[in-house]
Structures are given as structure tokens and as C-alpha cells.
Amino acid sequence: MRLVGRAGLKAMAWVPAESVVEELMPRLLPVEPCDLTEGFDPSVPPRTPQEYLRRVQIEAAQCPDVVVAQIDPKKLKRKQSVNVSLSGCQPAPEGYSPTLQWQQQQVAQFSTVRQSVNKHRSHWKSQQLDSNVAMPKSEDEEGWKKFCLGERFYAEGAVGPATNENPGIDYVQIGFPPLLSIVSRMNQATVTSVLEYLSNWFGERDFTPELGRWLYALLACLEKPLLPEAHSLIRQLARRCSEVRLLVDNKDDERIPALNLLICLVSRYFDQRDLADEPS
Image (cartoon, rainbow, N blue to C red; front, side, top):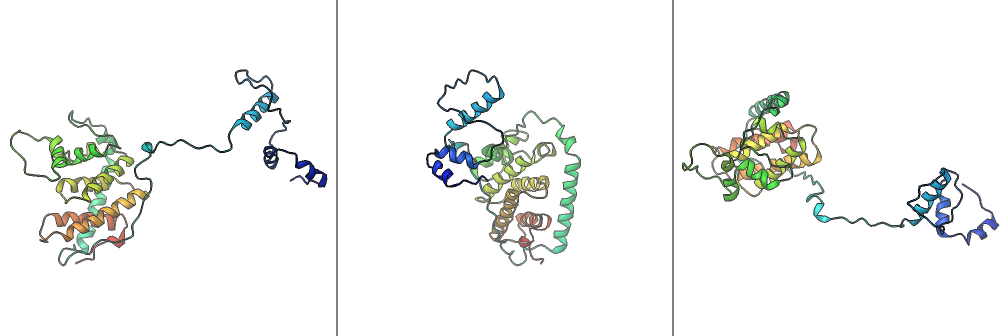
């Protein structure tokens, strides 16, 4: 820091504000003050290092003090923040909660499935897909809903009985199953995005076997440790499963084991213990 005497303080009264700011900043190179009124031709390259440094001074002086970025809101991602709710699941009705042994068995089997998927990912990724399999882009939410659940399900909002008008299986209409040759091609960004799309869909609709198979497969492909967004998504999924379970009248309904399974995996495999069912 340079000390300035009284005479210096008086002299500073005539120094422009820009110069004062520059003096407060450390000088890395010894450059003499340049005349900012001199002609500046950017098309003429500097001939000496001194001319180059003086040109930098001129360009810096011409920059505005405040710059406002022009941002297109349409290009911003719809959801910029991740809200992690700490609320737990709805308690299971009497007789609906699985035993601790059942939950431990499901976690062990799920761990084996994940290891198998990771071990053979390269092999299945190299397999050629059928000509009718067109995987949507990661950001295509509507495309993924149709791909996983089928155009018929997407249009009607529920799966009705299959018709016999067309022989064979039309996966475009009923949805593609989560084959290893398909999920092995999905990177973590796509896995998280599709999990979000289906969880949002599930948030307003009932549980179906088609939805359950895809949710299980996506959880099997979800890498640990979890990113904050994935952490929020799986907790949201477990809470929704517990809400739907409350609406099921019969404990022998085929949806109950599937809903219990998803809650079990989220709570016990992904370490969200506050969401775990109390053993029956």
C-alpha cells in the first residue's frame, strides 16, 4: 500500500474516479498510462509488447461497468431446485406390512440384480435393438411415458384388457418392457430423468404392473451414492407408494407386494430408514 501525504491528498482531488479504482488494484506489469483519446484501430495488430498492453488498457476502459446478461427463460430447465422432504411414509394398515425377513430377502435379491446388471452392462449394450425400438431422448418426457407405459395407456390413463384385433404383441401400444438391452443404454442422467417422469405420472394415477417393472429396473440402475435429485425422487416414490397402499381395500390385492417392495428398496437398500415399514 502506498502512503500519500497531504499534498498527495490534495492532488487526488483532481484524479478521475476511474484512475482511483485502478490505483487500488495491484499492477502486475509496469505499463505507463495511455491516452484513451488516441485513435484506436482494432484491425491493426500491435507491433510491440508495449502497444499490446496499451491496447488492453483501452479495451478495458471501453467496457461498461455493469453488464446485464440476456437470458432466454425458455432455455432454463423447468425445475432448477431440489426440495428434499423429510416427511415419512404413511403407516401400513393392519396386516399390510411385510415381515422383516421378507424385507431382508428382497434387499439381498435386489443387490444381486444390481451386480448382475453392472457386470453384463457392456454385453447388453452392444446387442442390437429390434427395428421397432426407438428410445426417446433424455429430455423427452412425453416420449418416455409412451415408451415405458404404451401409447394406449398414455392416452387412456389406465391399462384395459388387450384386444385380439391384431395378432402378436404391439409394444408401441402396451409399452416396452425394461429389457437389459434397453436399460443398459441409459446413462445416469437418463435414468434419473425417466425416474422423475414416471414418478410424476404415478403421483396422479394408480399403480400398475407395467409401471412397477420400470420403477424396479430404474432403481436397479441407479448408482450410489445418490445425487440430491435422485435422493428426493426415490423418497417421493416411497411416500406415494404408501399413499396408494392406504387406498387398497384388500390386503391380498396384487398391488400390495409390489408397493411394499418399492418402499422396502428405497428405505432399506438406499438407506432412507425413516421411510421403512415396521415389521408385522
